[in-house]
Image (cartoon, rainbow, N blue to C red; front, side, top):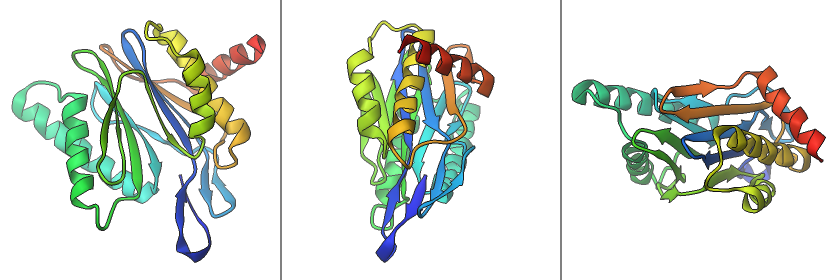
Length: 217
């Protein structure tokens, strides 16, 4: 989420990750929103469903992010209605990239990780200026990137099951929550995208994964 410092400089404070599993994409994010040095919200939502096969994480300005999310949902619905087929994550990410690049001189202060499953699990990272990067393993955004990256670099495998990917995503976010002061919150948001659809894990289910991770330490 976004916080303000002196001289009106704007920085992002959050941690979001996306992982490609064998048959799914797992997105995870912390739940802390900050306002200056104030922990303003501990149950902030940072993962949003766009279609039945695509979801995304956001880091940055909440207002800018929500405006973009409304735009993407509307255009994805129009695309699928006109063509009677699912819009692919690549097509959606390309649309977002074009919109952000067109506004690069007055940019939306937001960064996104887009994950989805249409033909296969795919993952994209889109920066505020419209840089579009396809990730074949995992993607990370926010102030806790270095902490999460250390976990994902050492433990990610390309043949991970959906459950293993959830455990690793939760572990990466939890590592950032413990050491990055702008990452935290009541729990961790986790969403799984597969051929079956988009599923958001409940708080109690996430807590079980956190306890499982603590036992292994």
